[in-house]
Amino acid sequence: MKVFITRQIPAAGLDRISSVCDCDVWPERMPPSRDQLQQRAAGCDGVLTLLSDRIDAEFFDAVGPQLKVVSNFAVGYNNIDVAEATRRGIAVGNTPGVLTEATADIAVGLLLAAARRMREGIDNVTNQEWATWEPMGFIGQDLVGKTIGIVGMGRIGAAVARRLHFGWGMSVLYTSRSDKPEIDDQMNARRVELSTLLTESDFVSVHTDLNPQTEKMFGDAAFAQMKPTSVLVNTARGGIIDQEALHQALQSGTIFAAGLDVTEPEPLAADSPLRGLSNCVILPHVGSGTVASRDAMATIAADNLLAGLQGNPLPHQVE
Ligand code: GLV
Ligand code: GLV
Image (cartoon, rainbow, N blue to C red):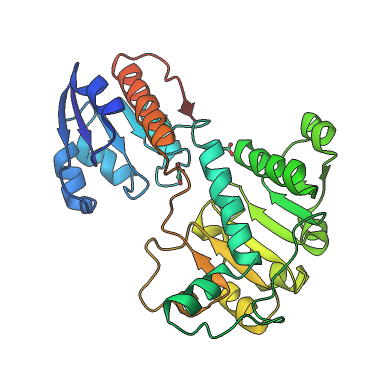
């Protein structure tokens, strides 16, 4: 069986694959171009892909009908046309569960950093501008006893809610496609409409997937409903936020601050005005970036790939 792996991945996964497959690993730090991706994958039975690889009908045509499986090294899979894969009988896998806690930690870190103006503080010290301790300098938002609004109460949303409810005594509001009675019981949480969540929350953390319904769901209308003291955190997908509207909201004080682990595009455009805003903390998409998470993602991605090559159901298959 011949497979193409579109980037170097942890040995925990690579060793499993290379012990049984003829595998070609893209050796460079930067992703293959669209042409390179299609050329290298042509004739392969399986591919292991990253978020930066666009997998669609054109890709499938170029690779050929022997392709059995696309294993994405991520929990999100908006880079893959899953409907098209399914139509062609190609299985698609993802890596849920193992990056929940790591990503929740980054969400809480961004919330703290944005609420307490850490970017401004770090810049101030780094640029040698810190002159003296001031009673009214760098005043941020309190966290204890406030309300967190979780947009998308999946595994990661629940892990963030748990941290903030049990750690900081926050009340929990959330939006979700379905009721979550066990979360309501554990955290006294309440499922509400998005507009209620936006008007009542002090902090809003985004954990939904990117799809046509959630694309740019945070635009002018959403920001107008949020409190001027509120902080928005996004560790899900950049496309869920309209970045021009966010820039406007941050600059005009419509909301207090934002913490982003994801942007659109990634990396952020060189001339994006968000880069210059001291009340916008931006990280380079590191939510799953811990040793244990990345090793576990590699292991699951390998297991998905190998199952698909053998024609078996994937341990984590998406449809
Ligand atoms: C990362 O963003 C992932 O979807 O795993
Ligand atoms: C991801 O693992 C989620 O379901 O939130």
